Amino acid sequence: MLTEEDDVEIHALAGRDRKTIRRYLAGQSGSRRQDQAPSCLAPYRPYIAARFVEDPHLLLSVLHRELAAEGFDRCYSSLVKEVRRLELRPICPSCKHCRDKAPTVEIDHPAGEEIQ
Image (spheres, rainbow, N blue to C red):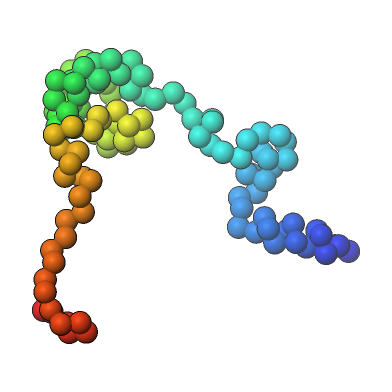
């Protein structure tokens, strides 16, 4: 028979994958981030950094073609995912002011009226 504590613990773990629970009980981390392999961009990071210094607006499709010529064998979506995950694209100082301001349009109208 289960105690009330066991019942609470079982309900707390509901929805978790059994392999995650097993890994946690074995003393391993429940997070996959620590278990991830190194980035596929590791050998190309100096080149990518240099290209973004030259042009912070560089299209990733162009970068993908350049890296493919250097031996990068992953698809375009893998490149995009890794550039975002590693935050490799710098914030352009000339464009930063546009991101800080939320685009708004103020229209004068009486309170409570809808505008089409």
